[in-house]
Length: 306
Image (cartoon, rainbow, N blue to C red; front, side, top):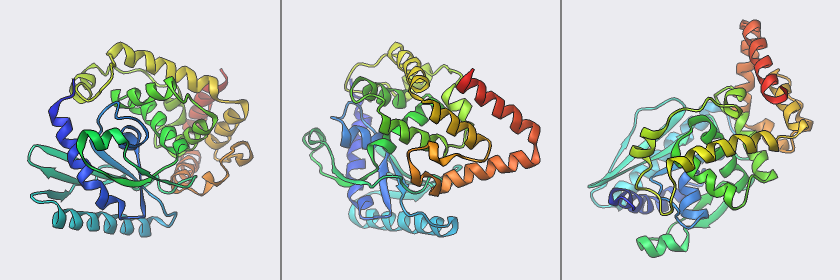
């Protein structure tokens, strides 16, 4: 059964989306894109996760992201009665603003490292069932399916959050882990702050508390903790079976700091700032602590070829 507090949050989210959509430097990604635009609201989603689209230098990007969020904040305060919009303190790579009405709060968030896209965005409208359920319309540019689900799979393996695994379950039960989505996952993997080996071969963690406090009451279809555990195992198996020999060799070359881009089908991935950032970290580790780099290289080799 849907918790009324989540419905209030989705209603607030739908009120804010048209003002977010005016900022063409951003595109929607994450759970809101999946559950309110791609799918027939199988679960509610209460955050707006954005990708900053231009590929420019970090200083320019940070200024543009800050300015874009400031314009959204001003628009919301002018347009939605009683709304409170505050800039949240920065957490890691994310810049965000919090939006609040009586009984509801959401956040609008931009990651400052994973900037740019490998495929064109799509202008999408909310699913018809969203309009009928909430009486609100919204349209916004959304990242490609490859990037939307590639990023979602990477997040699901990293955080192992029930919301992410729920979204992955529906992907595996419907479209499946396609080659395009695998390519999007590979790009997300080489953009991710966590070591590659830890993402594709994760240590499973107990998420029962998160399931009860951060997922229960959000879904319109059944999803038990046993379903969560089954999906997590299935996802790891799918990733391992889907990676080709070329994929594995590419990941090893990337981990060595000398990526063999010919083995990756997404040719413009090398332009992404997050990919540059991860390669710089690898080079720094090789220089500062070659023994540690060798250990991590061997660990990945064992995961991929062992």
